[in-house]
Length: 349
Length: 277
Image (cartoon, rainbow over all chains, first blue to last red):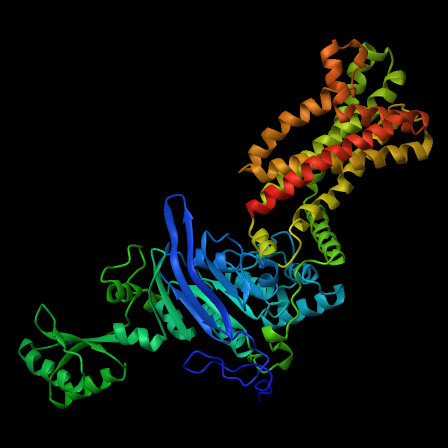
């Protein structure tokens, strides 16, 4: 079914290193940034960030609006001058060898960077020609990409008639014409409906499976968890945490179970039962009848609920709550993020 | 739809196996420029209203000035048209140049320019491409002016070769002077500001010249200004080419003037553009 494992790196192992035995690779590091800083006026938008992205991994930059995610990405992608610090992409200095860097990267920004006056196919042809494909090959690649991104039917329509999801897909397609080794995606699913969002996730995973290194920004915890091999959390231009999704989740708990009971009197027994099953200490609900407990694994919820029923403790209601980005920030920085990210972001989408 | 993961043609080449160029080879730079010129031409075709300044405007000015000033300046239309037509060509060409700066400013604010910036293309291609497409606009402006002139009774003594060379000179002039407005496009923040600032340059360039009136009627200081204005030399050269069919020293001065403007403003525009993006 799959013939590519010999020619492309597989998904990285948990250590974050690409699992391959090729010796040609001089630099297994896709992105190496040290003390990256950007100041706009008096605002230090990015304040001394260190990053290392390994070849072949999906690296997530998680943070609330205004945390500096896009600024980091734009500096690495040669779109914004670096004020201080250094950055290398596959060993090439972003500041001094921008032209080399641009040959290895694809960039998909938050706003569609395609030409509104042209059709989808014309856009892809244009970007193919600009990157040195012959006219014929540029047409061929355009058609391949349109098919791959399910845009063939819309190929000859002007972009103005594209839906939001179609624009994003075309935008991503335009970034992949030369099969860049590193793809930057700035908030790839912000503003997309749930179905389109799932498609985009699928596409991003495919891209990684085909051998591209991916660095994406997101303000959604579930997105970072779903896609990224490693996540760095930034806030106010500084890195507040970094690790695999599991490592980060270990710090904040994956989710919590909230149970309300029919009879107040049962609460103490229920808490004791839950405490037996789960390492974390259940917290009784302030109003009386019930408790909540942090889960390291959502399956534990079933164990608790079954135990409660086995002991004939009547459950009035139960809910599993995913930690929100706010919880993450609370856990990592000890204070809530100061943007208006809704606490139940993940369950909406 | 099934996933296309397994399609081996989509395997991404390893970075270590790629050849990376240190700079853009010249023939690639040329392809990039012509590709972006194609984009600009396609835009023109899809938004024909962009061509109003090189179609309706020259018609309006030729008719208006032809009837208004003919009696006052030359006594008759037949004797004024040979003086006026080259002047109108110069004026409409300069007006057409202004659009280059406005367009660039609008383009730079659009998402697609972000992509141009992230691509390994020569930095001036997004400037040079539209400039190449604009050559068509200057040719249209000059041709329309001549056609209207002919309808009004203008009979160019230089014949077809003289007129063709006249149009060619207009196109060269347009390309050279447009760099001034491109530069303005790169230093201002909004398209409206480009328009405003450009008007302050466009009007003196077009009118402080010999385009519409004989300079002998002007005070000495103003005459001095018209002499250093490259537009005066372009207009004189066009009159020689189109009316007499002779290539005079004026052609040389006109080309030198254009070259000087280009030599000053190309580096200014490119530098300010690359800093900005």
